[in-house]
Length: 260
Image (cartoon, rainbow, N blue to C red):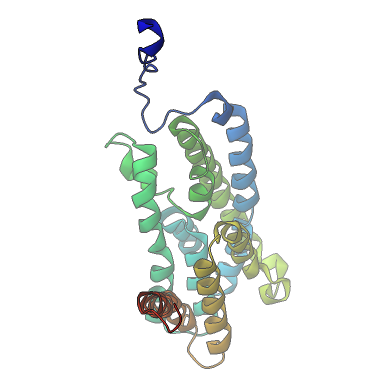
């Protein structure tokens, strides 16, 4: 009976790291490239809208192209030229663009761990840390897929965005009044389309909704560019209210009521 009472052999231990995935979770390189190209091309073409809008707001061809080459974050670029076109103070316009662009620093904290690029490549990769590359990179199941998605999206988008910015700035004069075309809404619309699927929790949706209401409600009250700055208050307000609700619920659960 010794054979029957002996414990069964332990299953072999694996040394799989955090990036190892089962075959079912792997994603073909071709599929990653296809998704990355789709985002890069779709968003890259909207650089034409920025070029037209920037030229229409009074910036020169050189200034417009320099913004796309060096800043390379569409929402911030549109915020800057939109505020200037509306007659806003340059410092307020720059501040609004800065606070919109600073979100990329937080993206970088997550992407640096996920991509684990060599130190020499990180300064170059930092230029491509934007909404679109983050949206493509984060859902990838493996580090290899994440690197492919980040590289293809960043390269495609950077090349097309700058090319179409140049073309848009050159063609702005032929289009006439750029406000009639409403091209300044192209990049924000793409940004919202990428952001919406990432708002999974109620807290995230409420924060985004409150930020939108703040911007819309203050557009006619504050100088151009300022409503974007004020909308950042949506996050601490929602988190504060959520914390109070959580504390109240915890106290009610900890205090036994009558009849319990």
